Image (cartoon, rainbow, N blue to C red; front, side):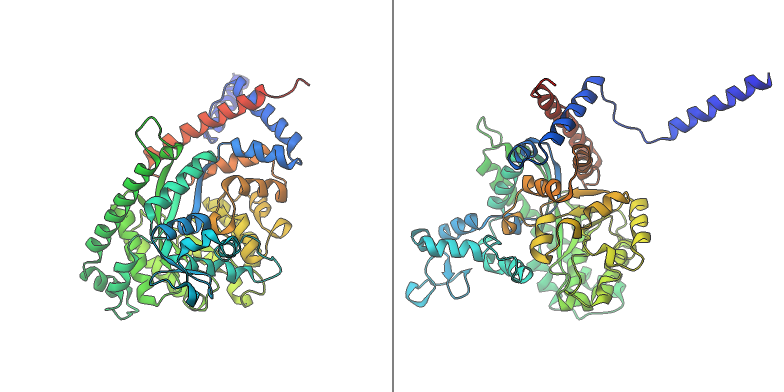
Length: 482
């Protein structure tokens, strides 16, 4: 009897232990065999650039969680739109500009560039990182590009059509696009408000101006108009619909971190309000260079603003650019805690870039904390290389993986970087030696850690699993006999 009781106890404990493990998606033996065959084929072509690119282009990639809409457009598109809108090109600064064009004064109409191949190519190089010499200052050239194409970047509908069509072609099913939905309204309201270190009072001042209704109204009008134009351009709902019509889009409200404190707070407040009331806006993020002198000076103040507003809007998830820094770019103290404070004080559930993680105070404790809290890092390899000069073994991607921190591949500003979703995956393999199952885990992370609502996320996950299974069956079927 004693022996039987002991056996029963062991069975109970074993069953309880098994049931406590995380539930994995159930796959048939056929699916598991297809995954193994796909992993084997991937290993065979991993060192062959052309077959690797073809494989990765066809691989379902889930979502892109770190993607600035204006920076995702190629310069060629901006020049076409600028020509249509009769804008000018200032040759001295290589900038698209509004106003009266005068070729004799050095600001011809943009349409003239299409008849001058040398100037056209110079313009593309100025508006992007194409042909950029990596020995020069990539950081400044990268960020300067945004001001150069600024007047042409107001065509939100055309931009949405562009990025969703390219995403679908690259087998990306979900985008979280960063944009500034109601910047003009917030800046106008902030102009009449002086900064108050009592953040509760400052919030009341902004709400008293009618910020909530003004921001919601402007954002709804802008997104409704843009999405209608996108559907028109992609012929959605017709037999000739572009595949981009199937890409699910959500938005992240940008906050310009280099502004005066009251404007930064007003944009944060607007982002929280929008994410609470418009289901298309799912989060907010601080943008502009993290090493900007104002951003550095006000970093802790801005984290305290997020801490305060998070208490008022606890259900709004936050993602933050943090650790987009490297040694020599900023003084050592700036490298010591930006990622940690973004997580602890800024309540970020995702971190964009995270390049300087090993320069943080006690980095291994930080990595353990991020792994335990499941703080995903949005990995943007091309921009980290071009802006910071960090790539290969100097990049912390494998460090995050080794310590169990969830990661996902993202594009950041693929138009400026002259990259694509496929190219970012190629870099991950070529520079970091990732295998197929690691890539697949990162693809799944891109949906699992998205800010989509539960029903949308469930649909995206189911569609992704079906797409991955179909992809693996195709790969397995195409393998030569061993």
